[in-house]
Amino acid sequence: MNTALPSTLANIDLASVFTEVTLDEQLGLNDDGSGLRLFHLQVRNNKFDYSGLENLLMNRLGEFVLSRAQIAQYKLEGNENSIVHRASRFLRQPENQELKEAALGNFMLHAFLELALGAPKLLSKVEIAEVSGTRKVLSDAVHLLDKSEGSRLRANLIFGASNVVGDFGDAVELALDRASAMAANEDAECKLVDQNILQQRFDTETIKYLSNLLLPTEANDASYDIGFGLFLAYDLGLDPMRYQRDEFTQIMENKLKLDLRAHIDQIRNEINRRRLGIYPFYIYTLPMNNAVSDRLTITEAVL
Image 1 (cartoon, rainbow, N blue to C red):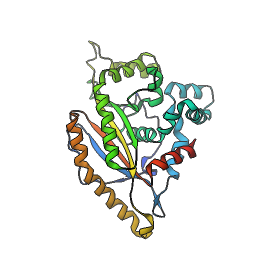
Image 2 (cartoon, rainbow, N blue to C red):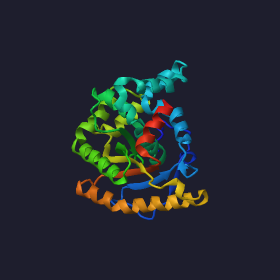
Image 3 (cartoon, one colour):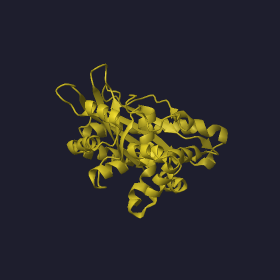
Image 4 (cartoon, rainbow, N blue to C red):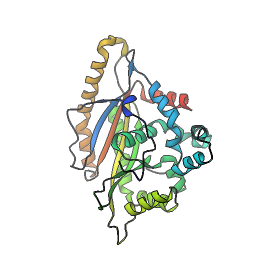
């Protein structure tokens, strides 16, 4: 991870909340680091325990909703304790109902791109809406993956989409539909990032770093490519009453691997069918007990 744009989720250990499952097969789209990763939460009485996820959300909601400049201002004024309250109050406002309903998936996207990929946040969904002047925007997030080597400035802008639905196949289709739309609207999506830099929403040193990396001049020979980060949550689909507690975890992990094995060709084929194979994809999957209802229950508990 680059140091000029540090993570907004500093000092968070991903493994303290999520367990990663080793996969036998990968997408194999290209050689640019694309990948598919599977995580799950801790299990209690044959069901996923959401307490660790809820604590993470409650403690770091502000870093997801608010801009770096807003957070810096709160800290400068000695109001650091107000950051989470301010973010929670924003999402509870009636006009932000759509943002609230998508908050869990978008936060998870944010967390995995920062903590698993090492791509710090540039813009959250809220910030994108503010910069663009409209809430009808395609990206759920924009993150920056710095791939510079020495003086050669290179980066991937990661445009994100999250889906929290019951069926794995539906989650894949919906996410790739969003990726297709973002690819077709690539120039406009990139202009949102340029606007963000030019509006000076960062400190002076960060603005200089981002300008050098993303706004090429004759002197700096900078360039960047586009990639997609996807977060897919879906129903585990196991009846907790059918298994003994000491066997459930292994049965669950075996099913998760089978689920991905059953859908990996779908993901690969759908990416290629949409002519998106040139783009790097960073896909993070998380099973839930009941994705649609749990999404709302967790959000209400946090806010």
